[in-house]
Length: 332
Image 1 (spheres, rainbow, N blue to C red):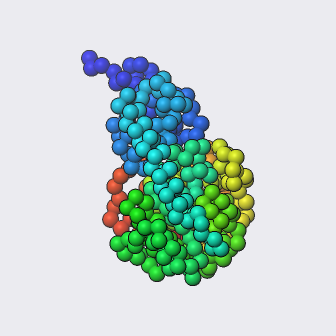
Image 2: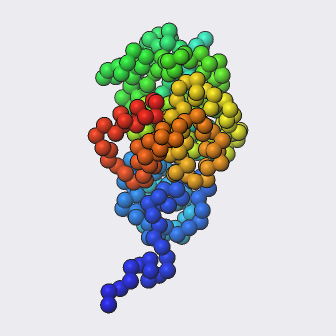
Image 3: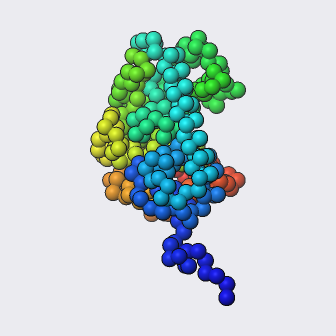
C-alpha cells in the first residue's frame, strides 16, 4: 500500500502559498507552523515582489525557528533584508543631500519614498526601488535642472511632457509635473511638511496619498509588485502600526468624493477589491471606502478581469495586452 501524503499521515495540513504570503506580510504575524509551506515557490517570488525584507524580519525576530522555515530560506531572505537597510538609507540620505537646501518651492514625495517611514515600523521593511516626486508643472524643468547640479542626469527618454526621469547611477528619480488632468492644486494645498528633507519637501495627506497610490497602480495596469498592495493595506486602515502622520481614521467621504471628481471610481473599486482578497482583515475598511455608484456589470468585469488575476498570489506571467485591458477597465 502506498504511504499516505504527509499532511494526512501527520494530521497537519500544508500551508498554501497564499497563507505564507499573508503570514509573512503581516506586521503582527500569527504564531503558526509553516514547515510544509511551498518554500521553493515562495522565496524567489517574494524577492521579486519586494516582500523579502518584511518576511525575513518576521521569520527571524517575530516567529523564530518554530515556523519550520528551512535555513536556506531564512538566510536568503535575511540577506535581502540587510541589503534593503543599506540601500534605502543610501538612497534617502543621498536624496536629502541633494534637496536639503532648496527653499521656497513645493516638492511632494510620493509612493515608497514617503511610505517607507510613515507606514512601516522599520524603514528596511519597504524597499525603495526609486523615488517619485510631484512638483507644479511650471517648476518641472527648473527642478530637474536643480537636481542635475547634484549629479543626477537625464534618463534614456521621457515618457510624456509632464514626467522626467533622472539617475545618479544609484538612485532613479521620477519627477511628475502633473498627476491629475483637472489640476494638482488641491494636492499641494492639502500636503504636509516633510521637514527631514528640508523646507521644500512635502508629503500628501492621507486621503490623497491613498488615491494617488491607486491612480499610479491603475495607470500601470495593476502590474505592480505586491509590496504596493501592502502599502495600500496600511493606508486604508490608517497606519495602525504607527504613531505618525497617517495614523488616523481615513475620511471615507473625502475619498469617495475625490475619486468621483478625479474619475477614478473604477480604479478605486478594483484596488480595494484586490486588497480585500489578499488581506481579508481589511474588509470593514474596504466597505467604508468602496464607491457605490458602479453598475453591477462593471463590477463583475472588474472582478473577473482585474481583481481575480492580480490577487492570484505566486503568479509571475501576464497574458498579452492584459495590462492595457486592466488600465482601460479601471479608468487609469
